[in-house]
Amino acid sequence: MLCLALLAASTRAAPPRASLLGVARSTPPMAQLSDDAIAARMRTLRAKGRRGTRREVLRPAPPPPPLALPADESERVPVWPVPTRLRMPGAPAVTSHGEHASLDDLFPRSGLAEAWDSNAKLRTALRKALREELFRPPAHWSEAQVRAATELSAACMVSWRAVEREGRACDAFTAAFAAHGVDLDGRTFLLRLGGLCGDAAHGSLIDIVPLPRRVAHSWHQDCGISSRTVLLGFPPHDGYEGGGVFSHHVKLSHPLRPTEGEEHGAVVEYERYDPPPDPIPEEYVLRPIYSRGREIWISDDSTHLHSTPDRQNRECVWRFM
Figure 1 (cartoon, rainbow, N blue to C red):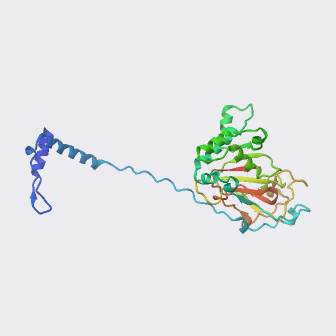
Figure 2 (cartoon, helix red, strand yellow):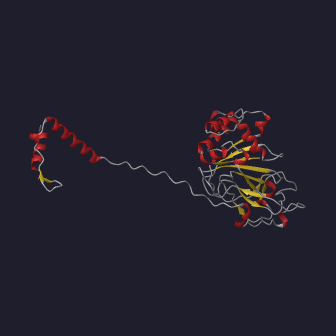
Figure 3 (cartoon, one colour):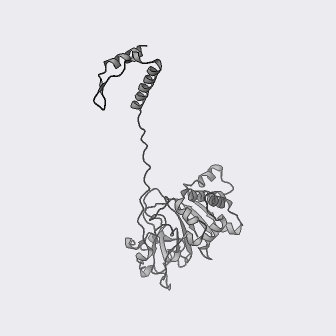
């Protein structure tokens, strides 16, 4: 009752308000209102009070995607003239270098290229399928060791040749494709990509995760023997076009001699030649571009030096050998 008395007093004390026509109106005193009208007035005042104290919750905007890193068209980067003392004796000059391939060409009418460019969940699902279906840990490993080795943040090495050799159906890959509207089976996917390595393929496939820092180029060859390496890029986000996905390369004018001995077969480390050669100038560094239609990079180990990108911008890269 005290609340109603105070409200009536404040109503009576309020000065008249002018209408749109300039005629003064007065609010009727509370005593002249029915019980229902008083209750309605109280509800209105309470609602206004709640609206006056309500605060808008500001949600932070989602972070923008990382900026694209610089990348090059291969033909615009000059061939590095290998110093005579580093050339493989008697080897002819190199006449061709790395090139792109596209998922559209490799898997036509499957829907893979479109999904690869626009569906990060598909790409991640395939990384999980690789660990689930192809990774074979040593028998003596503990559950904790297997779990650590199959985390998406850890590199994972498997055999794509085992798909063919052991007749694996690759059902986890097929299920991932079906879940995301891609008409493709896992066995075809892996064997067709691995087949780009040629007849002398080693048969290995490794999911290489990015380093969270900038690194110096460390130029090398895996074995120095003519063999094709196939890289399938997993971009940092949908619709990406730029660098930092594929390994960086130096196109050679001539094959290199081994770092040790006279025959190839071991890793060739540029910095370990004796005496140490001059650093390779920046103008000869090829940073292959990644985009839709250029999801795959193919290079011959004997005609390039390669290195982890000095700056990486990728979910991962798959390397078939």
